[in-house]
Amino acid sequence: METKTYPVTRTDEEWRRLLTPEQYAVMRRHGTEAPGSCALLHEKRPGAFACAGCGQRLFVGKTKFESGTGWPSFGEPEAGAVETSTDRSYGMVRTEVHCSRCGSHLGHVFPDGPPPTGLRYCINGVALTFEPG
Image (cartoon, rainbow, N blue to C red; front, side):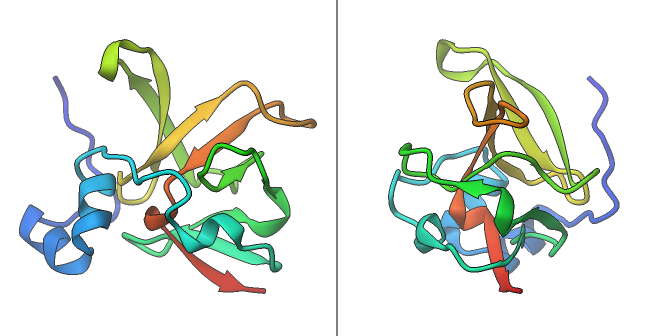
């Protein structure tokens, strides 16, 4: 299997120093934070959400919506900011979302979101930083 190289690449030791233990578990080991556990779930101010691993802008506040799932949800990412892959873990087939700049796991995308995209990018809040706009 070929391993993709990203514009921002760090050693495992560098990721461990940069990220909190919870961020590392989610972003580098494909974990999931507990639902309802992140302060960004309730963030409603205008602004931008960026990757906690590399700072790339991923989503803008106007695409965020309340999905009732316990994780920050967005209707659409910034152009080129995320990539997807097939996730077959836990006996399910889902579409994983990761940062296109550093490859960090962000969450998953589902086809049950609101118009106009019909998509719900269900993102782990610990994988994000927020910059008020």
